[in-house]
Each structure stands twice: as C-alpha cells, then as structure tokens.
Image (tube, rainbow, N blue to C red):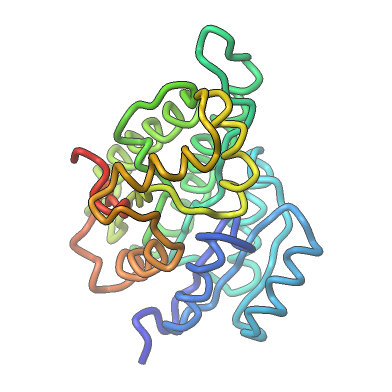
Length: 259
C-alpha cells in the first residue's frame, strides 16, 4: 500500500520542476493527481511522460488570477470527487531590481504569482476540506522566505508573506483535521531558475554561475538541492505520518537558513 492510497491531490505549476516531481511521488504513493499549468501542450506532454493513465489529469489555468485558482481546485473535485491535498507550488518572479529602481508592476506580479495564488487556492480548497473534516495544504515558500537578499525583494517579500499566511491558517483549521505547512527549498536549478536566474544575478551584479555558486557555498552540503528532495518531504506532509506537523516552515536547503 502507498502512503497516499485513495487520496486526491492538486498541484499548481505541476508540469515541470518541483511540481512535476511531487506529482510523480504522489502517484507512486497511490494518489490521483491533478497538475496545472498555463499551456495545454506542456500539460499533454507531461501527462504522456508521467504515464499514469486515468490517475493523472491536467487543468490549464493561469493561477495569477482568483478565477484561475478556483478553476483548478473546483476542476479537481469535478474530476475525482474531492480534494485531499493541495500543493500550491506555482511561483516565481521576474523584472528584479534594487528597491530604488523597482516597478509597481514587478512587485504586483510577484505577489500574484506567489502570495495571492497561494491564498486563492488555499481558500478554495478549504471550502471542501472543512466540510469533509480532513485535508493537507502545502505551500511553496523558499529559503528566501526566511532570509533577505539584495535585488530580489519582490520574491523575498512574497515568500515571507506566504509563511505568515501558512501559520495563521494552521491555527484556524488545526482542530478540523487539516494541516497547513510551507516547504522552503534552497536553490534548485529548475526551468524557472534557468529562465529568471540570469536576470536576478544581473540585478545583483554577479553572473548566473556565481549566483549558483553562492547558493551552494551558503549551504552545509555545499551543493544545490534537487526537486526529489522537496517531493519526498511533500509526501510526508501529505500522508497520515505527517498529521502532527502543522504551521511549520520546513527548510529543504541543505542547512542554509538560520532557523
């Protein structure tokens, strides 16, 4: 038996990177999984590569809007009859700059992509989880949710906000059979990192290679983490074994964060 037999999971941003690794891990443990992304083509490709048949489903939606977030959560329930696990994984940031040069649009986009998307999917999921008396909510935070770094304040601020939301929500629903946690990975060279990392590094006055070296050198393990590292922690949090963990900001950063 798998740790997630009979469970239904919804993963935003699930076609690649950490979300894809979590989808495959959840499926391995017996869950039915809905993955989300913006591109129908990438969704179809991901489902074909995953090869889980009727146990995996794709919903195209832009989670930078409340309508998109609600469509993913409601679509999960329409497809499989319930939602037991939400992994609000989608996120990122672009147009990094020092605060003195930062645009309103860059900050707003980061908040919608990271914080607001987490809030919108969390709220929609709770409308199902509270009546059924059970649920697991996992938010994608970051080591940047625990520290400050120059020139990437739009990401740092959004991830700190997610951590506060997680802690408050955990207090609200802890007695209702629902756990709420955040995973805080260190640097992982995902597709988004490869796309946005060079621009973030430029804003910090270093090269992309130097940025990756900096992340690795700051950790105790002296290397970047892998998507599988995060996926396995998500399995624990989604399982019965994780029932005693709530309101936690779990570092998966090789010992980088100070707490």
